[in-house]
Image 1 (cartoon, rainbow, N blue to C red):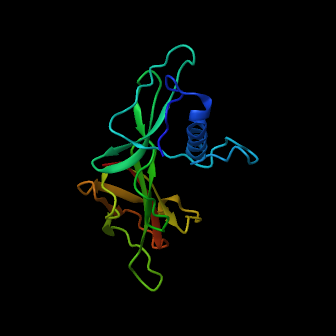
Image 2: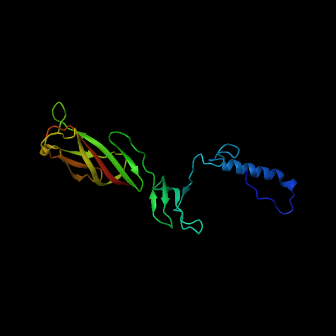
Image 3: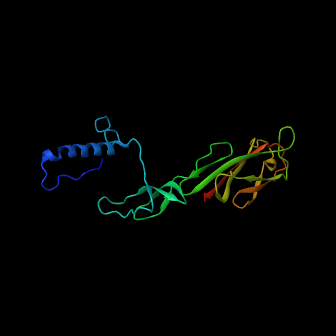
Length: 207
């Protein structure tokens, strides 16, 4: 039922009583869509927030009062809806959600601002303990689902950690080069055969 502005010219209270009731019922059901009902404890509090898809970025140029404002909104980009915020005074628009995370041993997660963090590990391939030998090389391929523009490999570390007395035998893994934004190549530069696994993090922009 539609909301009907009342009263109209020439109408009495008796003529509009039912429509006034209908209007009030409509307002209550509309507000209650994602709020606690007016007759329940916590009336008016949000239960959740729904954001309709926007065709453009909202303005955040605020009158005074209320002063500086920030917009949180839902927008479709290339057919995919994400949450964004816009800084005050029509400032920077920042993407807040992205691809679903993959919480696995070799996985990825989206970071606000359009960044993508990926991680994984590589096992050695020699002997019964699957250790690395000096000079071993290989390639890491990022997960196929995300489209990532590779920036850098953040960190590489080994398992087990070096505990010997000769620091020259500590493990060393060099990242050689990115593979067209789909991964990177590596070389095990240590001469030690004590290491079976190395772990990596990589940072890129989510395309």
